[in-house]
Image (cartoon, rainbow over all chains, first blue to last red; front, side, top):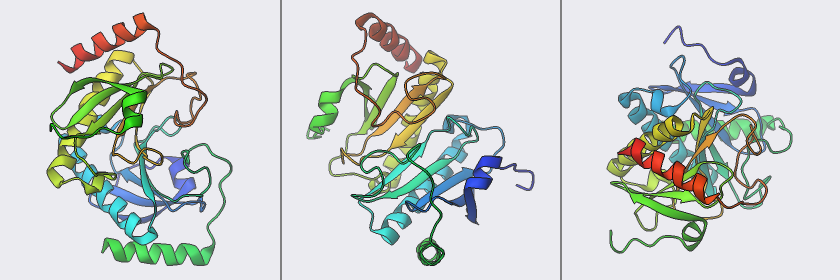
Length: 135
Length: 135
């Protein structure tokens, strides 16, 4: 894994919370929504179907583990899962907690408005709860 | 499967192309993008993590099979895969072929503008090619 190269924009727009078996679990620096990003630690992959079958299975497991924990921690109305990559081509999967009345609800989060930083206290509480739910 | 109930909005906005092992493979009636929708034939499920582990694995397989075929048939720049469900709660997975300069590129398709019907000839050519790629 030591030679995995993270896309610069992913590095700038999110921070690493932990490393799962396959993916880096990252938190978006945009605090408008509880927004996690899973980045498989594989170079040169843009599409999920380019992963090996084993990696595809592990990615599915990690997405669902994280989505389930995120739903429990936030009590969100709906979890949005998406792999778009139109701007950043390195494969990454968004897992976002959505609640009625949040910014752009019920539309998507991508491309909406301008990022706002997390409140430091809210961020700490959220991350602590999430890590506990994942442990 | 005989008692699977399809959400009315999914039925109105897309048409069934075929039935895979788990999912209905459906084509969006919005012809602005080549836009497929996979609907697992399971009642009462909103989140991927609510599926059984076996169904999660099969869904992953079907998403990737369809995404790979869609990429080959369209030559798209990027495949967008998303499970949002903020409006329609029945679990469904979008698999969309995106190309530079298409409507709202590089933003998401969801919630953008107004649906436009397929050109009948273009639709037939696309569906025939897709079915061949999947066979």
